[in-house]
Length: 98
Image (cartoon, rainbow, N blue to C red; front, side, top):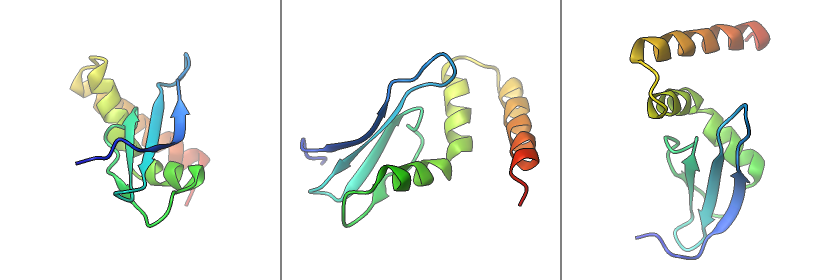
């Protein structure tokens, strides 16, 4: 059971280029929960309140899930979702070579 007491870490309302996302830290449970575009990000368990940077890094690990979930939510066909995910990965490799 989640307590009612939480601390807002990030609350981005979104804009015409990207959907909103948020995360709240629940100190009694030591859990950060994610929502909005980040609804497919698993809870982050920490002993202390995480920083914005820590939350963003955690969410980034699951960006493909988030992107896929968002496109599904707005009604994009599965074949088109797969194309967009592939394109996103290719673009990422081009701009951020490992």
